[in-house]
Image 1: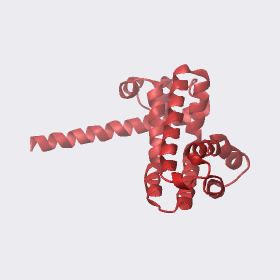
Image 2: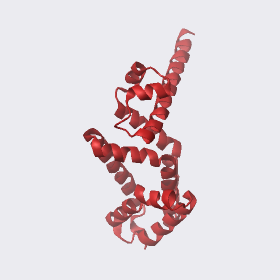
Image 3: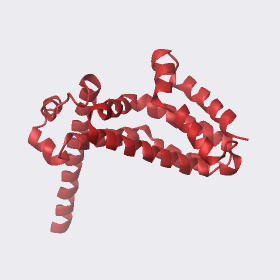
Image 4: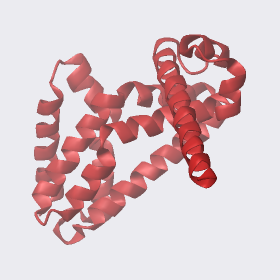
Length: 202
């Protein structure tokens, strides 16, 4: 019984700790978008989250770790990992690419502010520059793995397809068409899917 009670208490502590992390990340995300990463202090995050700064330092250690949590929650919340796995199961290359376009559009829709936080931070913080390069490298690796599953159908070959995919899914493309020109996310996803099919498949 004591073991079971201890397990329950441990589970409760873990849930509380995760809730605290998410509360801090939500407050930090708002401040990063409003003030920028560099100008946002942990003291400001603590005030916005209504959580003591020592608790934040204990949970994260530094501001970069908070931004890492912001990104993780964004990716998890956008559902792209599940959609990525589902797309790989579709036997039709064209449909796979349309699904790829759909979850890229939703990812931008849910997290363009997070991407912009990273981009701006990387311009003025050497540590964040290295972190952003790792993010981009991971993105390219995942894209290559996805496209390699249909390599026989790729008109420009795998390397060329990866190049085109990276170019077409730059945040600035979404920003221009959706934020500045007023397209809906759905219209953007349809356009991007058509472009993928036209440019990448034989």
